Image 1 (cartoon, each protein chain N blue to C red):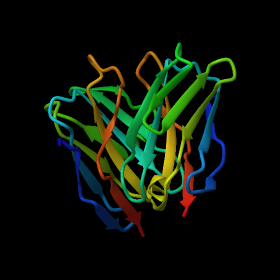
Image 2 (image 1 turned 180 degrees about the vertical axis):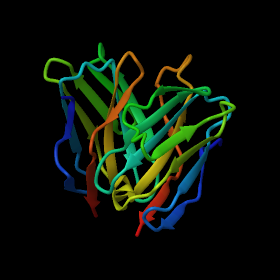
Image 3 (image 1 turned 45 degrees about the horizontal axis):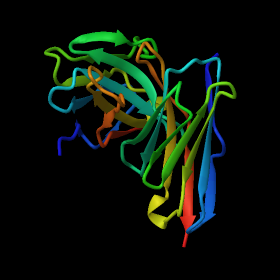
Image 4 (image 1 turned 30 degrees about the vertical axis):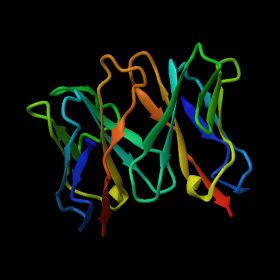
Length: 116
Length: 111
């Protein structure tokens, strides 16, 4: 069964350092999402791509976060510089909204980021 | 501002009983409402979707209701099992295909 891949699974970095996360969605899924989930809370949308275009990045802290999906397939989320408050789980999800009856999002395993 | 609440942070029930989880929202007009299951350290997994014009949806031991007047969805798990222990998230989706997740309810089914 096709899955969303994310790497790394765990990342420990010092504050002020740069960190990057990678996501490979399910093949054929045009829509890709990056979420941040703080322990005990629900996922918060950071950015949504439709193919290679950003359709929603209203909650992305653009002074330090950036995201790209250059060829409309895999995607990278970067934080520079990292702050202590960025410690969280970063989840990637993909969806094929066209022709979908359920608008189901398929989530990857996430990257657990700890900033020290 | 938009707000989604889920009944309680944690819910404990006895095996075999029906678990009922609540999702309430304000200042939002969702076209669809979804429920996801999330196990510790893993990404959420889709369970069910219900549309704004549907009152109830069932899937095996799961039942979801959606009342747009009350701005509330109820999620039921009948004949609950310890394997149903997880965090359950509701997510609202508008016609612009924008998702908003609730904070989740952590369900523990005790043997």
